[in-house]
Length: 221
Image 1 (cartoon, helix red, strand yellow):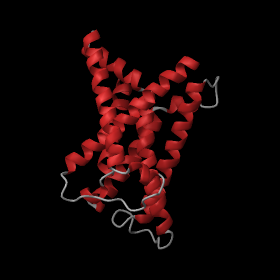
Image 2 (image 1 turned 120 degrees about the vertical axis):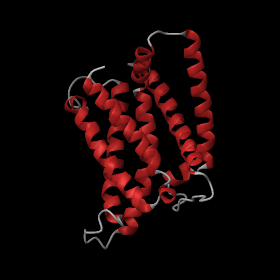
Image 3 (image 1 turned 30 degrees about the vertical axis):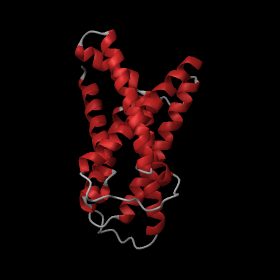
């Protein structure tokens, strides 16, 4: 595997771990949340530097349905991350306290909440659009294909997606995304690992949906 591909994989894995640790912010503590958030922004910048060839070609070539939707997802994700970065600095109580920001905190909280939950969902969809590439890399590392193993992996994917749909409702993600509920509830007696496992399943749901959306769009193309 080429060094650049290893760097891309390392950056993407680190970003995924960071986003999963950012979601239970009250459970990990506000200071840890801010430092992980700063690391997430730096990883996001690193991700775009490593994928600069894709950015450079945004205005070139023909736009198929797949490419159009993929670009919309990326742009929406960029808006979410930009909103999170700016609102995170405004709301900072630890890392950026040296900045004289006194106003706009109420709007910043709303922007931060919207960016967090929409961004989480969009990251799952974005991963789903690249799932074939990820699976092909996995096949190369394992060396060899197996029809039985493929069926088992697909079956596990379906189970994760089904549980993810349940966890999506249980964790009220839709309510946070549309500001139906504007205050996030955390059960501090719940083990952190169970919270994160639910969010892994929710991400898995949107990876699943993104993957099959990508396959449908590619057929249309």
